[in-house]
Image (tube, rainbow, N blue to C red):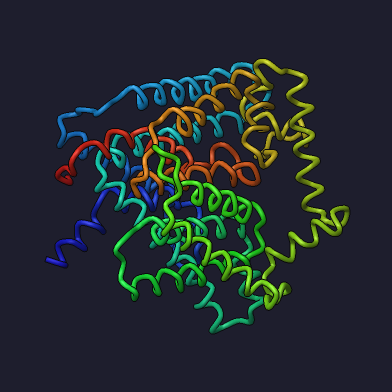
Length: 408
């Protein structure tokens, strides 16, 4: 029985989908360097095959409600606008590459989230459980490398892509925190395990030095705290509020004993506050943001065209972005693109009916986290998980209103 259960997990669409979403991080691992094909391409093809099999089993029938319909129209309009902007984009090479990445990778991420993962609460649970497990496994690099190298060397190794590493581990941390605070009737052993795994992941996030994921975590925890109120009567659920208060007091109690030199994230925040003029990375990000604003002012309605940021800033047709999806959208896709993005987030965060079910709170809080981190790092074509979460949240009113269905 257990073997069959494990088989269903490892040979599920959700497993392939999680690997696809995190393929950018996975393929950077040294032991996969022997693969003769790009891992993202391979996993994309496997996802298409698994998705086709899913819909074939269901006779290509889709479950749809008005929120999913609105979200699909808005996301489809955004993708169409990206494609249309190729007409006036000065980029001859990177623009097409970026547009294809947004349409194919971002499009499949959204489509798989809304119509496959979001088709049942069972699939949603499996998806987020696998994402959390992947985050824990990814964090184990910290321990495994620690047996061979010093702490500084380990951090340097993990920090070659420290923002993405921190984001992935923060995803697992957020999952365990949400489960800890929202789930009821847990045993003492389970509570102890959840506290320890949260502390373990938090220590690694604090050690990696990424500021964006830390800001995202802070805001996500604030949202989670607000969700400890019953959504209908707005009254506080006292037991959960007390549990949250004890957790925060515990963190504040240990803050004075923290070695800030060891926790690079806190140290970098401290340096940014005390000596902002000496922070070269911060200065570079500000310059990129201002460049994006200047770029938008020259073509405020339709933007300069997809993939044009590199040409505008560096006079080269290369991959470049302002590390902020709102500014990136304004610069390349103009006010029209920005309004579409804002409308997409508005529908997901405000129009979709909210409830205190764990399988709504998890994707909702995750969506907050990834919206925040998208303002500090990466480009539109990299935010596959964000597109997936938009799809899952928009489908939540369907998968939470129906009984669990047979898993294909």
